[in-house]
Image (cartoon, rainbow, N blue to C red; front, side, top):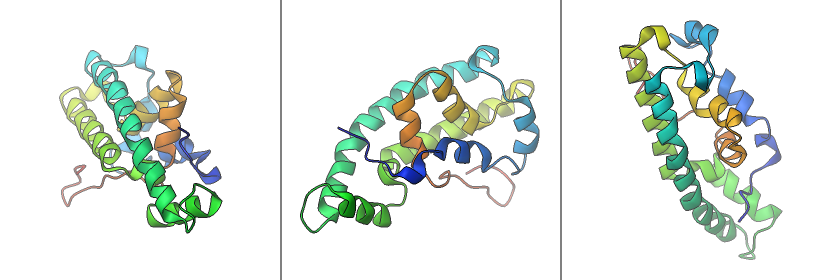
Length: 162
């Protein structure tokens, strides 16, 4: 089954890597982005668990997204019109599946916890979740995340990710 993403998502990974770069501690963290091989053991372990989790989420999200697209059109078929209607209803496309959102939030917040305990090895969560996927050749998983128009995460009043 195809991911059925839209052309505007083709550079989504760049957008996701850049959009938070000027928020809070990210300004400093962006200066120390590091590859998987140069990261702490805790960050590597987090990524190693993230990949199979995201793969499973991808496998579960695809049929849900296909059903969403199929039911969005008038004909009940998958065509350009039904794809547009589905994206109008769910702007993150297949990445709007609650499992994918949950995985992204979980990994983001776990990365922040590791960063708190290992400040000299801190890494931006989005760098771990996108750049490392690109480096690992996980192209379909990158395409899935690239459908997100924004990260499903925010800052609370104390400046902590939530």
